[in-house]
Each structure stands twice: as structure tokens, then as C-alpha cells.
Length: 109
Length: 116
Image 1: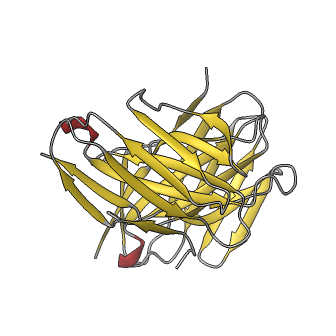
Image 2 (image 1 turned 90 degrees about the vertical axis):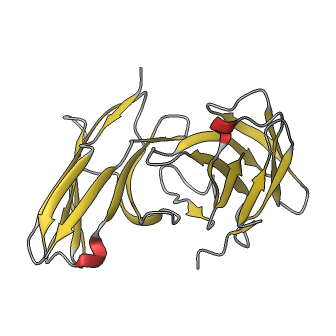
């Protein structure tokens, strides 16, 4: 079957660094997406990885290891506005996105 | 603003009723996706249309149906509504297919459906 696992909830401190992990088992792999979703709002695109390695975009970075079926999202210099859910999604061989349940990130002052 | 519009923003209706949710994709996007998100739950993929044709089906109930019109807007019809259908319904669009493994979905603001 196809499966994406993420921690349900994480807590971090303002100004710190947090890493949100995502492991996946899918039929085929064409790429991995990270989305941010604030409560009651629409998901918004953060990053896309198709090759192994680290993609950096400002305070956010995303890493992929295809051989391990593993990705992480790294958030640096955390701000209160980063409190949100972070969704990992994998594009399978038929170009369909398979979504994880999301990780709720709580930032404390 | 993602460029995807959804109407209505809120909808309150009674059990057993039928509603229609509407979505207009971003200009140039041919593919439309519908998702359901219940309170504190993940996104559940319902159905995808590409250029008017059904492309993929997810966990969509038989009471639900959708279509994409020639102008590329899409409608999601929910009938015989139950209390458990109360959720946020998102529409997303993308340029799929543009090239292998390279498209992102842009989400609309969602329609919050409350069934009483």
C-alpha cells in the first residue's frame, strides 16, 4: 500500500530550529512537496524535491533521500507566525499526490 | 491570493439536502482537484479533472459527484447530506501535465460546509 508518515504534533521555541520528518512508501516517485497550512486556511506551497539533497529557500530548507524514502523540512529562526500544520505530499508514478496527515507545529515564546 | 476562487465561502444546510460547491481554477490551469478536510484532519483527495475529463478518483462517496465544464470551472455536488459531511472543501488547480514530476497545486480559500 501507499503510506506517508509524519509526527502528529511538535513544539518548538521562537528563534530556534525545528526539523519535521516525513517517511513514505509509494508506488513510484516523481517528487515530494511540502505545504504549510494555517488553521482554517488553504495549504500553500513551500518546497519541492525530486533529487536527493537539500533545497534551501530562505528560512526553510527541505531534504530528500529517495533510497531511504525520507524527507525533512527544516525551519530556522522560528517565528510565531510559523505556527501551522506542515503537510508532506508525494507524487506517485501516476502523477497523483498522496498526502500525509500533517504535522501541527506549535511555537512557544 | 492563489488565483483559485471558490464559492460560497460558507454554507449551512440540513441533513438530507443537496448542495453545489463551485471552483474557478487559475488562468491557464487545466487540472482541478477537490479535497475534503474535516476538523483537525488531513486532506482527503476526492477527485481530479483534467480539461473536462475525470482523471483520478480518491475517497469520494457515491453521494458526491463532480464535473468540469468547457470553461474549466468545476462543481462538486454533495447530496443526501449527513452530519459527518461537515468539513472544509478545498479546490486546487495545476497546469498538469506540464512535465514529468514538476507541478504544484494552488489551493482556493475553501468552502466551509456545516450540516445541521
